[in-house]
Length: 325
Image (cartoon, rainbow, N blue to C red; front, side, top):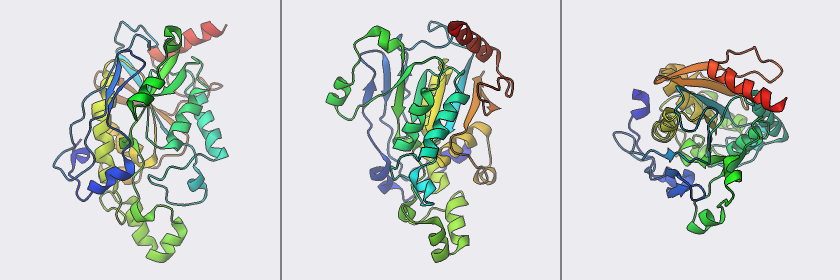
């Protein structure tokens, strides 16, 4: 998408605020590998290349057959539940704050909504509110697999996080964290009260910083800049998993998810700036024959007919029902 490849200027200092690590990542001596060698956001004519991950471990079977590629994959997008700074009406950006009690409840409710949809791999941002949302949501999944965050900060962290039981591996889901999925960095607005900031700088100026596509706040990112890193990561790291037949969940933030939805739905810059995502409400896409098809927000388990299951999802749910009976 053209918008995703727009050049970015003046963003070299953002890496220190958003980046976590770019080391090679493997899951428990298996063939689950992800390469985080993508370059930091910086001035360039196109997004820096990112090496595609290969998540092909026999430890993680899909809802169909691990030896077969499915002709469709599920993609679930969830904006994190309410954070403590959402509650206080503060600009959060890349500041790492946890969920409120309401946010925890929203994450659990999101989990109930997706409890009948297969999940093979989870991507989250490097921020705790997105990670909490993903983990809490998966506690509600009927498959009862355990999400495990992959740690590669050091070789020792990777070694100490190894799992030595093959049975346990088969009942686990890898969780991959990436700074590229972080919220838009709000620069000098981070930590400021939104209403007080509007009173100080004027409502029009603050609205321009928050809702324009290519105008960043002081020393921060515009939506365009956020889109460059988020969409490049999606194309190079997440889309290959969908092509392999993996079912993917992404737990991230308002602006990084708006950027991805802009790519999936081919929205214009005018359309994306008016797109609002509620906290804790999952969105479902089906990836089939190279196309992303939006299926809306899955209903809770007590309302199975509210959104249209595909044939594969219906069969997956039937298998879950048979196991429980």
